[in-house]
Amino acid sequence: MGDFAISHNFGGVVAAVLLASTVFAAESPVEQADSGPELTLYGYLKLDAAYDDSTVNPGNFARWVESEAVLDHDSQFSMTANQTRVGLRISSPAAGRITTNGKLEADFYGAGASENKSGLMLRHAYVAFAWPDKNLEVLAGQTADIISPLAAPTVNYSAGWWQGNIGYRRAQIRVTKVFELPRTSKLEVAAGPTRTISDTTFGGASIDSGADAAVPTIQGRVGLSLQRAEGRSVTVGVSGHWGKEDQHTTDAFGTITGHLNVDTWSANLDVRVPVSNSLLLQGEWFHGENLNAFLGGIGQKGEIEVTGGWVAATITPGPKWRINLGGGIDDPVDEDLTVSDARTWNGVLFANADHSLTPDLTVAFELMFLRTRYLGVEDGGAWRQQLAISYEF
Image (cartoon, rainbow, N blue to C red):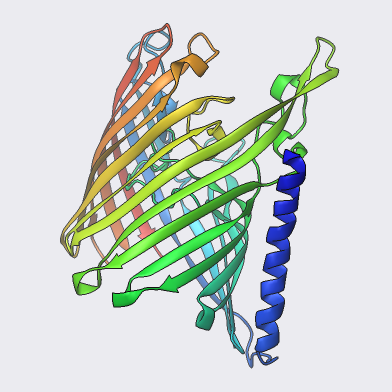
């Protein structure tokens, strides 16, 4: 019954998207743009150099600290250009009432043969078409999750993932509708099916358990933006997702012996408050289960219930300076952890500042403290000092 209901709902979502596209397109005059799409190249060249007084995982950026029982205060130094990013924005002239744009973006944190032979990693690849007079947009492709849309303002590449910030990027069909409210405030509703990303080797069977569930993961968010003085808006959003994996168990000979249906779900809150032109407060909270694909649960797989969140303050004392202070926590339920040395808690505190030497050239420095607790073995703690130099184009 559950499979039929979800499959039916997915079919309904697709049908609704196609119907909306057909109806609004029929209302729009059939026009061909006089010129082709406009292409805009953007990105930055970036060097990151970091010193850690204990071993962090994986090194070029910090997810968690290894237990001191394994590596006792083993310091390390990293230097990489992998976060260098290149992208292409694509937009077409309006055709009737329809506007179309897209984005293609990648960095170099894909799996490479060695540190100086990095692999290209796809970040965004989508098309978005909209009816501005209806405040309606449909996005198809890979981009950021609908849930938990904010990012912790760290110099560290992972932006708080595994440390209280969840949400990644995946293929999706997203429908967004904006409702105008009095005093230029607005209500935004976004929802759609997304790709279920999961472990392909659970139980010894090399099967994609997300695809094998035969239903997508459904995500949704409702965000309220309240207009304040000087054009600033306070935004509060609630979001969530639900999906499942059909994991296969095997015997000692690798023969599939059964199925294990595992849910993935979350309930989330995001808040963004621009106090003044020079002070921004923001943060997120989440609670859910089986969140490894959403970068929660400190990178541990399975039916693990977890709670976490992060907060940050951004101070802009002048046009060339920006300062960020914040912290985050990722806290799985200990009773759900099955590995003897599992990570039970992961937290971070950070302070960073960046300075624009020119409009395109920025130097940033970050001081970060990370603490990771383990089940049955010694905790890990590390101070991380990171320098970043970036040139935007």
